Amino acid sequence: MCTLEKQGNIFILTFIGDGEHRLSPSLIDSVLSALREVKSKATRGSVLITTSQGRFFSNGFDLAWAQAAGSSSKAMERLHHMVVSFKPVVAEMISLPMPTVAAVQGHAAAAGFLLALSHDYILIRSDKGVLYMSEIDIGLPLPDYFAAAFRAKLHAVSARRDVLLRGAKLKGEEAVRMGIVDAAYDSEGSLAAAAMRLAEELASSKWKGDTYKEIRTSLYPDLCGVLGLEEGKIVAKL
Image (cartoon, rainbow, N blue to C red; front, side, top):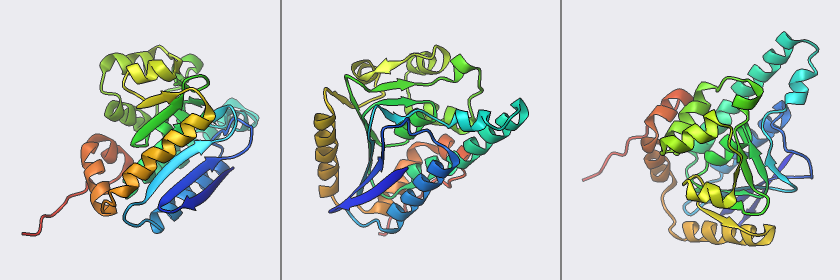
């Protein structure tokens, strides 16, 4: 599951335990509830860090739960349920009225990769962090909002090709070179410290949350359209 704590103006959402942090229906609900709590308590200078314990940031949807349904058709129904349920999580991330930082301590695959990508900044461990979109390898289509997010966030056509059409498993430094990740760090402690430094720097600006949200959503009109978010508009008062 996940926990939410607050240190000053900084919210820290953490996937706890040593498991894979698979995005099961219950974990999706827990993350969504935490994000809505963050939004309700946001003030000027708020920042969100999302991180994890153990070897995984998140290894994607809970495919074992889907396959336990007993038949291929029922498994696909469960997978579809997770795809639909996760969409509001991405919408909440894109519309949060504050800067967001993903501190990727381990593997982030499929929906876990998308969760990291939904943040404004991504920091990763160079020794254990891996980004991987498994859909091409396991034969699953890409949901529309996944595709929209990768179009919005991965500007290099070659990066999108390698991630989505080759199933490249990207370690920290390679992800930095491709422009997907902002920086890589060689230990759990250095990553956590860097994430907190960045969050404190962002918080010190004390930007107005609604303005931050509206500028962010204006940058990704295609993604916001797929997510059902109305593009923010800022009205200047003369």
